[in-house]
Structure formats: C-alpha cells, structure tokens
Amino acid sequence: MPHLLYMALALFSLSVNAQSPAQLQHDFIATMQEAHDFQPEALRQLFASAKVRQPILNAISRPAEKRLDWGQYRKLFVTSSNIRNGVQFWRDNQAILAKAHAQYGVPPEIIVAIIGVETRYGRNTGHFPVLDALFTLGFHYLKRGPFFRDELRHFLLLTREEGLDPRNPKGSYAGAMGRPQFISSSYRHYAIDFDNDGKRDIWRNNADVIGSVAHYFAKHGWRQGMPVARRVSGVQAKHQPIIDAGYKPGYTIAELRQQGVQIPTSLPDQSSASLLAMHIQNQTEYWLGLDNFYVITRYNHSPLYAMAVYQLSQAIHAQYE
Image (cartoon, rainbow, N blue to C red):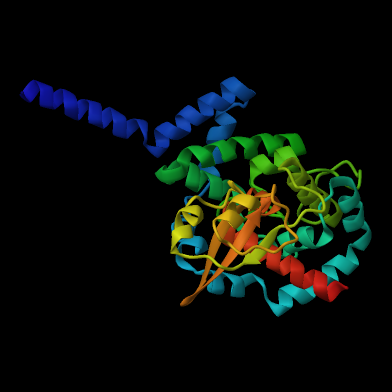
C-alpha cells in the first residue's frame, strides 16, 4: 500500500506540474516554434515582459450576464447618450455605412449599435495591454486557459502579419481590440481593409471598423432584409421547455403558434425562432429570437447582449430618420 500511495502521489504531482504556468508556457513556446517558426528565446523574452494582472482575473470571474437582469443590462447600453452619439456616428460615416450595407447586406443601424455597445463609438477601447490580458488568462486562468492560449497564438501571428509590436496593442480585459472589440482570431479572419489603404486598422479607421463588422456578420449568416426579434405574448408555464432550449432558433413559427404563443402575423410560418424570457425585476418580457438575432450572438454569446444591440439599433434608426 505505501508503494501504491507513493505512486499515486507521484502521478498527482506530475499532473499538477503539467498544468503549472511555467510548463504551459514551455509547451506553448515549443508549439509556436514547431508550427509557426517563432524563435523560442524571443518568446521567452516577450513573456518575461508580460504581467499577470489580478484585475483581469477578477473581471472575467464576474461577467455582467451572470449578475444583471435584462432591465439592468439594458440601462447600461440603450441610453440617451448612446442613441444620440449613434445617430451622429451614422451621419459622420453615412457613405461608408451605405457601402457596407450594399456589399454585405447588414443594415447601418446594426453596425452602428455594435460599435456603440462595444466601445461607445471608440471612446472606450480598453486600457489593458493585450499581451498581458492573454498571458494572464492563457497561463493563469485554468477554467478557459486553452481558449485564451489559442487567442494568444492568434495574437502573435496577427502582430507578425500586421507588423505590430506585440507589447503595444491595448484592449479589454479579455484581449478584445479596437472600436469593434475583435479578439485576435476574429481580427485575423474577419477584419478587412475597407478603404484599400493597405492596412486593417480597427483602432482609428472607421472605414475598416465598419467594413470589418459588416464582413463578420455576413460570414456568420446575416440574412438581408429579415427581422431580428419580435415581442410576443401568450407565454405560459407550459412553454418553459421551449425557453430552456436556449437562444439558438430551434422551432418554426408554425410550431410556436400551435403551442399557443401569440406571434405577429407578419412572421411567416416557416421562419425559425427561439423563445426568450427577458426579466425586468418582477416582470418578464417574452421575445422571439430569429435567425439574425442568433447571428448577433455570434459576436457575443449572450442573448442580453444581442437584445441590447437590437434595441439600441432600433432607437438609433428611429432618431436618424
């Protein structure tokens, strides 16, 4: 028994050591050398300059979606200043937004609302060094370490491709960058040079920001001219399993009507939808999340986020006209 106990403890020790930040960094550097021809010593020096930031770990452990209801969340983003500044952003960038709409089919108000929700139209793009954010979360946040190490991989490739010093870019606590708050993989895959000046600048160039957001939505299946969400009534306790199924459209409008949900007649029976319960203190609003609503959640996997973008877009559109 003592021998078996010793072996078990030894295996446990190896398991713990394999997950240590130092070992994770060693393995990451080896992978970057083998797969992408990075120089190990350069990466070791770069990581030696990175800082583990406790505020980042604190922030990611308390996401707004976990602690706010819809009423509280809405008040953060669907504000008079966000609406007013959104209308002004639309007017200032009218030609570019029209070009993006024509090319990708995404309405100007949706693009504007995304930028408003993400960074208040570029006023708050984040103050954390992206390197520090991804270093902290990749090597010191075990819950989602693999995801953030992959984002660190994309970040290093991105900075090499774009000719950026990886120590310079600033962003959110999760490493999202620029006015549209693209994570590194999204930047590499969806950011575009919309004004053909030879750079993809999502920090300062509104043409690239607008084009990149429109391109992102188009690639994730935006359906031009189709609605996003609709308020419904007639929801009862028996409909809870439909709500619990989540925000990915999994029912046809016909099926929901057969279940007794009262839906606007303008929506065709064959359309797909989810049934959403949006809580405001002691009240609940019920909405249909249609295919375009789900596309918005591909930007941020939260129905609260998607609803905030949608309602802000509608308010901006109403005042723009």
